[in-house]
Length: 193
Image (cartoon, rainbow, N blue to C red):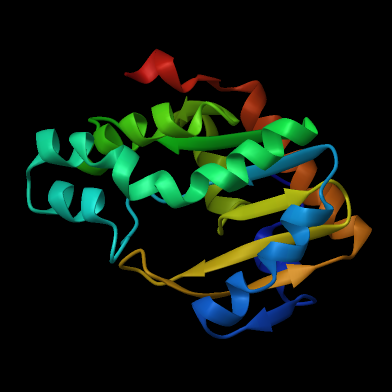
């Protein structure tokens, strides 16, 4: 879609962090500093979440156990979510979904139930945003207010390898525009359960 930039163009001018640890170390300050809104787009139909007991159960085909373990696996995120709620930060997530739903997506929709006490989560049919995904949104990203954006670098297996940060307001606005367009074609995640 020619009306938008692309994440591939934005990362050419962004700072790269070549390990998951160095990339995610930047998030603590962003979460502390955010005052109004966090926007997040997920692009992949599956991610590798090593060390997550719920994910590992799902990956072995035991969806029932995986769902049972979600709260235990995500409990470390609760203080962050509680803090964002207390400060009135609006956390919005969007993701396209391909049909038929994969076991990963079925599991993630259950994970969203945990996240929904802090996030407003929206999904859309991948076919509705296929052109946008193929031409513009080639990476997951998060935007914190208008002061910083994070663009994730996943390998083809869905493992995080690092990522980029940008504080360039023109890049941040482009990411916000892509998010708004995708959200306009989305429904609350509960529509897909």
